[in-house]
Image 1 (spheres, helix red, strand yellow):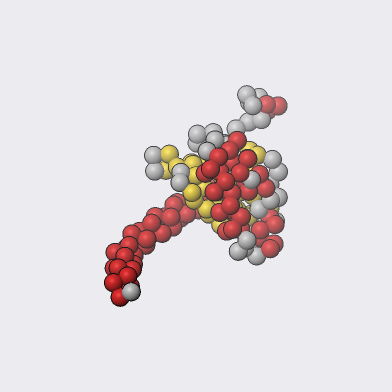
Image 2 (spheres, rainbow, N blue to C red):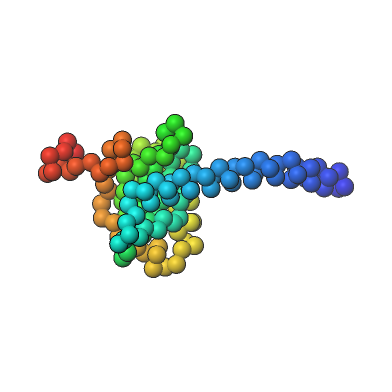
Length: 155
């Protein structure tokens, strides 16, 4: 028993810095994602809040609210840089929709589950706003909205 406790204490001591490093890396990703979205969409007359940010592997879903509207952004990490892939409302809470966006099924399920858990901690009014964005809007490589077919695009 004494030996087991000693081994557990040693493991906690040795793994503590690693666990903190992993957590810090996740916070760094969330900070980078917030910065990207704020730089693209925040305006003095329409302030943007970004919460929650859920990162799983090379993908993330970030909830956002701007005034009385809100939605979710899907992002992908490419060469250490976060790129905006698409914006949606309720769709990015669903694993099937995340799969349509190119995320592997197991990763899509894990991400959808993590998004639901993170959003459950939000105030009800804020969480409700995240589903107000209609449809799914795809973004180009620069994070700009792709034109719809009737706007002269290829979709």
